[in-house]
Image (cartoon, rainbow, N blue to C red; front, side):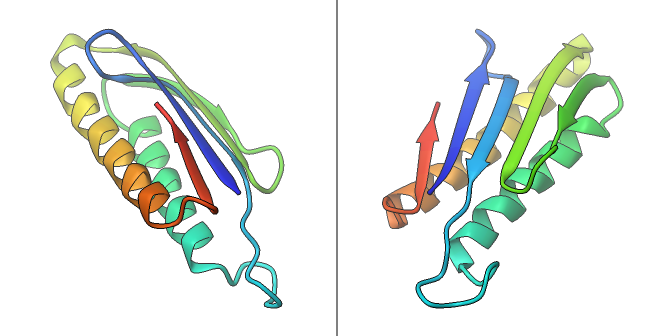
Length: 109
Protein backbone atom coordinates (compact mmCIF):
# COMPACT_ATOMS: atom_id res chain seq x y z
CA UNK A 1 0.00 0.00 0.00
CA UNK A 2 1.07 3.57 -0.71
CA UNK A 3 0.36 5.90 2.19
CA UNK A 4 0.34 9.67 1.58
CA UNK A 5 0.20 12.05 4.53
CA UNK A 6 -0.39 15.74 3.92
CA UNK A 7 -0.12 18.32 6.69
CA UNK A 8 -1.42 21.78 5.86
CA UNK A 9 -1.08 25.20 7.44
CA UNK A 10 -4.19 26.99 8.70
CA UNK A 11 -4.70 28.58 5.26
CA UNK A 12 -4.57 25.24 3.42
CA UNK A 13 -0.98 25.36 2.14
CA UNK A 14 1.22 22.28 2.25
CA UNK A 15 3.51 22.15 5.28
CA UNK A 16 4.65 18.52 5.22
CA UNK A 17 4.25 15.75 2.65
CA UNK A 18 5.19 12.15 3.38
CA UNK A 19 4.70 9.26 0.97
CA UNK A 20 5.69 5.74 1.92
CA UNK A 21 5.19 2.28 0.51
CA UNK A 22 4.71 0.43 -2.74
CA UNK A 23 2.00 -1.54 -4.43
CA UNK A 24 3.08 -4.66 -6.27
CA UNK A 25 1.35 -5.97 -9.36
CA UNK A 26 -0.04 -9.42 -8.67
CA UNK A 27 2.50 -11.79 -10.14
CA UNK A 28 4.04 -9.00 -12.20
CA UNK A 29 7.48 -7.43 -12.15
CA UNK A 30 8.48 -4.73 -9.67
CA UNK A 31 7.28 -1.36 -10.93
CA UNK A 32 4.42 -2.73 -12.99
CA UNK A 33 1.51 -1.55 -10.81
CA UNK A 34 -0.30 1.31 -12.56
CA UNK A 35 -1.87 2.71 -9.40
CA UNK A 36 1.50 2.90 -7.67
CA UNK A 37 3.01 4.58 -10.73
CA UNK A 38 0.16 7.10 -10.94
CA UNK A 39 0.35 8.10 -7.26
CA UNK A 40 4.14 8.30 -7.39
CA UNK A 41 4.05 10.42 -10.55
CA UNK A 42 1.52 12.87 -9.11
CA UNK A 43 3.22 13.20 -5.73
CA UNK A 44 6.74 13.52 -7.13
CA UNK A 45 5.62 16.07 -9.74
CA UNK A 46 3.91 18.24 -7.13
CA UNK A 47 6.87 17.91 -4.76
CA UNK A 48 9.33 18.90 -7.49
CA UNK A 49 7.14 21.84 -8.54
CA UNK A 50 7.01 23.11 -4.95
CA UNK A 51 10.71 22.52 -4.24
CA UNK A 52 11.84 24.47 -7.31
CA UNK A 53 9.36 27.36 -7.12
CA UNK A 54 10.52 30.93 -6.66
CA UNK A 55 9.39 32.33 -3.33
CA UNK A 56 9.13 28.91 -1.67
CA UNK A 57 11.75 27.40 0.61
CA UNK A 58 11.31 23.64 0.85
CA UNK A 59 13.52 20.66 1.39
CA UNK A 60 13.00 17.01 0.95
CA UNK A 61 14.49 13.58 0.94
CA UNK A 62 13.93 10.32 -0.86
CA UNK A 63 16.57 8.27 0.88
CA UNK A 64 15.06 4.89 0.06
CA UNK A 65 12.84 3.49 -2.62
CA UNK A 66 9.23 3.95 -1.63
CA UNK A 67 9.84 7.01 0.57
CA UNK A 68 9.47 10.74 -0.03
CA UNK A 69 9.48 13.50 2.60
CA UNK A 70 9.01 17.21 1.80
CA UNK A 71 8.84 20.07 4.30
CA UNK A 72 7.89 23.60 3.28
CA UNK A 73 9.97 25.95 5.45
CA UNK A 74 8.85 29.36 4.17
CA UNK A 75 6.58 30.88 1.53
CA UNK A 76 6.56 34.48 0.33
CA UNK A 77 3.17 36.07 0.95
CA UNK A 78 2.46 36.45 -2.76
CA UNK A 79 3.06 32.73 -3.38
CA UNK A 80 0.71 31.32 -0.73
CA UNK A 81 -2.31 31.21 -3.03
CA UNK A 82 -0.23 29.41 -5.68
CA UNK A 83 0.99 26.89 -3.09
CA UNK A 84 -2.58 26.32 -1.91
CA UNK A 85 -3.55 25.54 -5.51
CA UNK A 86 -0.73 23.01 -5.92
CA UNK A 87 -1.68 21.50 -2.55
CA UNK A 88 -5.31 21.18 -3.66
CA UNK A 89 -4.29 19.44 -6.91
CA UNK A 90 -2.07 17.05 -4.97
CA UNK A 91 -4.74 16.18 -2.40
CA UNK A 92 -7.64 15.90 -4.84
CA UNK A 93 -5.62 13.63 -7.13
CA UNK A 94 -4.49 11.31 -4.35
CA UNK A 95 -8.01 11.34 -2.83
CA UNK A 96 -9.46 10.21 -6.18
CA UNK A 97 -6.90 7.41 -6.50
CA UNK A 98 -7.58 6.31 -2.91
CA UNK A 99 -11.31 6.19 -3.67
CA UNK A 100 -10.72 4.16 -6.83
CA UNK A 101 -8.18 1.78 -5.26
CA UNK A 102 -8.67 1.76 -1.46
CA UNK A 103 -6.62 -1.40 -1.02
CA UNK A 104 -3.64 0.26 -2.73
CA UNK A 105 -3.69 3.95 -1.75
CA UNK A 106 -4.38 5.69 1.55
CA UNK A 107 -4.55 9.45 2.06
CA UNK A 108 -4.20 11.14 5.43
CA UNK A 109 -5.08 14.83 5.10
